[in-house]
Amino acid sequence: MDSGRSPTPHRVLAVDDDPVSLAVTAVLLEAEGCLVQQAHSGAQALDLVRSDPPDCILADLRMPGISSTELAVSLRKAAPRAMLLAMSATPPPHLDGYDGVLQKPLSPEGLRAAFANQISPSDPHRPPPAPRDPKDDVVIDPDIFERLRRAIDPDGLEEVFSVFFRDTGERIAAMRHADPAEIRKEAHTIKGGASMVGALQISRAAAVLETGIDDPDDRRRKLDELEAHCRFATIILRQRLKA
Image 1: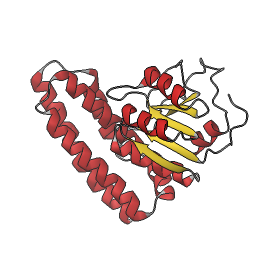
Image 2: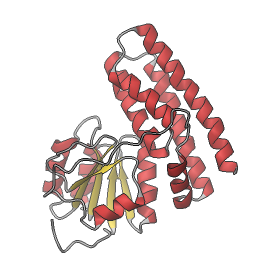
Image 3: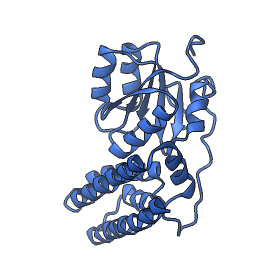
Image 4: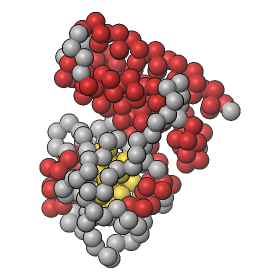
């Protein structure tokens, strides 16, 4: 890795097709003192990088269109000196093209470690952090919620959750009329956004749909459950925001 890089990059491009994940990522980066630009797709990211290369690029691994290693190759050509980090809820043990992989939900500590070059491409087989094992009855992860509350002002935090629930509701409505492949794709996006804001029950319900459910009646029931989790999480969140 380039030893001349600053420990904290000044200009960072965040890339994610999920608006909730993108908003949270931008807020966390801004809290670290970064000037953040946002892109909603790999293609948009390439357009931005070619016109004005940033110091660092954080890109979600699974997006429609160009993503993953293919996106990394193109970004390297457009911005060869930029630090390139992938983001994933389930980081792979090895990933070509990136300087490191950050596990979602992101944390300030994880960002600082990456910026300090503690995530190294010379150690591609380092296992990802152990997954959380929360109790099934936890609706909003208290650690993630408090982390967001410290990083974002009250109005901004309320807006982040409003965007998440609005976007999730629209995706659930679309999934009711979509084919199985599209349902899996939308479920993956919902899972990613839910993990970023700590909506654990929503994330788990979306993960079930992401695996694929063949029976139409079972799919409908799981979508009903996902919608119910959203309604319940909204109530819990309102209570937390007032506390």
